[in-house]
Length: 413
Ligand code: HEM
Image (tube, rainbow, N blue to C red):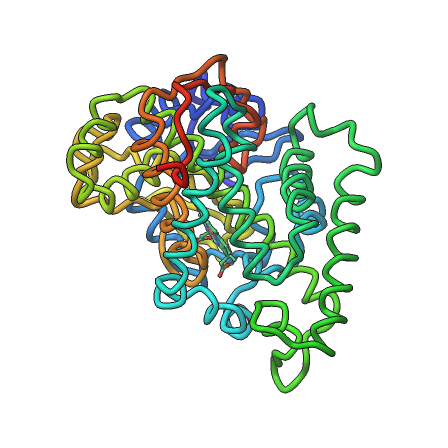
């Protein structure tokens, strides 16, 4: 552990902070005063908090000196805890093993594969708004934002419709149970949720071995790494990663995009006036909402970032939302501009081997859902305060009641 600077007063990036929203005041100070900041944790431990765009990008590309496998990718106080939480998913593997495993699923998520799904995503987005538009008041998170991400990832994996709502609940429980009091009373805790998801995975895998289909589960049961079929554990890890990553991130990005649209009605009007702005708008929503706060790496040797010495074994945490407001990269970083270009945001990670596998899928889902809302529910507004998730990992909103002028579904046009 290295300590080369005093604590900055008022800086606290641990879980409790996040229940109040992104701490952009803290990020602004850190980028200006201590862009490579030793952040204390409990028990005299700590981690390096990186808040500059260039540093997040450089570390993301340097998997040799900054490993995702050595200590896991979450911050928690002990490595045992981190590894127990999410052990050896592709997120926690370094090359060369990472390449073998990622290759197995990457062909299901290429821009070309997703382009073929765009019509389907748009059709589903129309149906989501059709289902709620006559009511005038809904709970936005579950009834709108969650819908397309859960439907698409479950469909792509090959899960039957009956289990889709349960996948939404389980993925919430797995993420929420780390720090949020609302999720800590669940019988059996996160272990029970994980066991339920593994059991479902085992059942679907068993079926696809006998009845192959055009889905990711079939791809996985037929896949081989080094001449061997994936074992049950590998299958469970893939399944869990895809369900959680496919759900939590995009749903919350849609929540934050909705807040941005409500707070910036002039930007919503720009989109209604000029729909050709939807490409740049989608990237601006990603920059703005940054639904993953951070991922962690561990230094594999004594090294440095921006001249600050980092010791072998130190935790290095990449704050994507901070990088996405870096004034050296973005003009007026704290303004939401649907026409922003260029927009080199790091919402999907800083590049390198772990760059988000679901980026094209997420873009298509965000664009389709937000476009339906902006065009068909133009006066949508909050009824109460958004209820934010306490998590130092996912930038989550648990509930967000909204209202709008009721309107007819598309099929009545
Ligand atoms: C707005 C939506 C999303 C955001 C903000 C997001 C963000 C991220 C980030 C920050 C990373 C880690 C990058 C790194 O460590 O360098 C990542 C990795 C990943 N994401 Fe996403 N993601 C989103 C949507 C999705 C979706 C829809 C899927 C569906 C499959 C997905 C699957 C994955 C997977 C499997 C990885 C691990 C890739 C690897 O380790 O090789 N993500 N994502």
